[in-house]
Amino acid sequence: MKKITLLLFSIVALVSVSKAQTPVKAIDFTNNPEKYKGMTISISGVELNTKVTTPGTSVASGSTVSTGKGSAAAGALRCKAPKGYSVATVNFPNDLSFKKCFVMKSSVYASLPVNQSAIKSTITFKGDPKIGYTITLFKL
Image 1 (cartoon, rainbow, N blue to C red):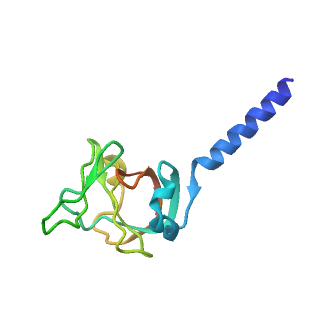
Image 2: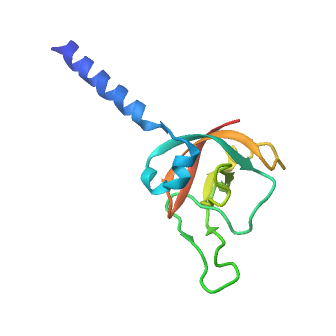
Image 3: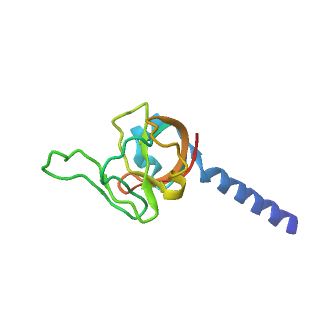
């Protein structure tokens, strides 16, 4: 009986781990980010930009994203990052117009090469299209 219970527990744990981080194509994500709401996903072939910083742009879980009404910057993305997080400018080569808020812990962000405009990488993140995304892992 113990062996059967252990076997079932192992199967459940293995299935949970395999669904914990889903590899997704960048084009699928940019076409329908709502589909991946709340999931931890991994996307390769994106570009991290540490050269250009957009004033007032940053976000993380629990923050809000908004665009201003009736101003010249109405199409601009504005976000607010919590303490201890930094903005990560993420560019998707398949859709350069796709702009969402991405943040990562400041200590992790500091480990990125400075003043690089296009660092090809694979990122793992979780979040919501309306609130923003928190990058938990990156690989250059």
